[in-house]
Image 1 (cartoon, rainbow, N blue to C red):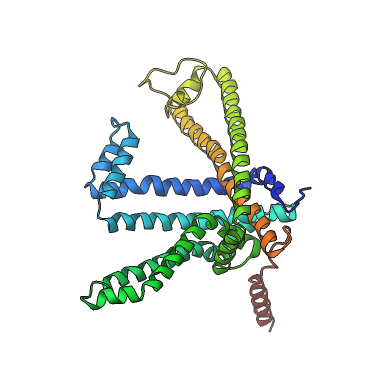
Image 2: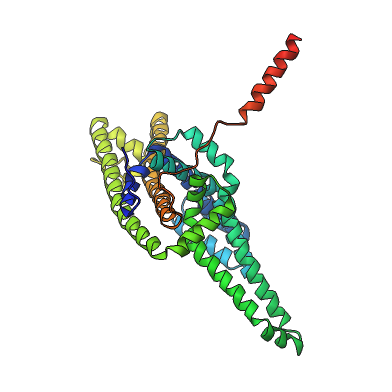
Length: 374
């Protein structure tokens, strides 16, 4: 039975809450999309900017340094005018928010239910909740960016007004307080976003509210209790680092022992299988890998690729622990700050009622039945 005390000791529940297969799987899917967006998109954009040179090097089997190709792709992007690379970076930001608004919402909702109700949440219900609240999860990230951009453009346009001969400098001097006020709001948004954005998903998952409430509560709790915020996050970071090391050591030992025992039983065919994807360079093996270029059977080839997929999934789940812990710990910190600021019990959470969307379906079915009988 999980007990919440309403103080920093609740943060130590983060390990047990984060180490949940549903959260790890959601994090793994989110990381997969992130890798595809951040990893693959620059290659295509850079190749377009260099008239196919970047993609040509990537497809060249003799060109093995993928890292260098990736760097060249980014260099081609940043060689654009400032508005060009800024537009590409903004597009990447929006695409990543599209992904993590959904999967981050799922993880935070499962974590919120785990913490406050001490019970699990079905994966399908987490999917449904994230789908219903998707716009609320996604909007705060865009609203904050647009809010900052609005006040930035106000000062930018004001600077252009200052170019008007004679009158311009006088107008700038007169309305300087408004520019300073605009600067205050921009800094307020920047600080609130950098340090409070991690509460966006938690707010919606706990309160079942909208995007404006998420921004309001996140900024309010941050600015109302900054020292509590810093202390809670320091505890969470230290504890998270320790538990991440433990999870990784345990996970890698698990993989290593399993593969070592399997190789002893399988023999040289094991080396052939892992040689398909050159995994012999990253996996400890007991024996000599097959010579380069040696032909392998079709079944060994297929088995090698399946082997690689399973390893990617297992290692991906280990990496996903960091994502799961980050979101889970921020949900705990949100509950603690909410108690400090609004004096709301840490176990209080928004609970969904029966799905009202099913009612029209039942009524329409009964109506159709009455028509047929009539």
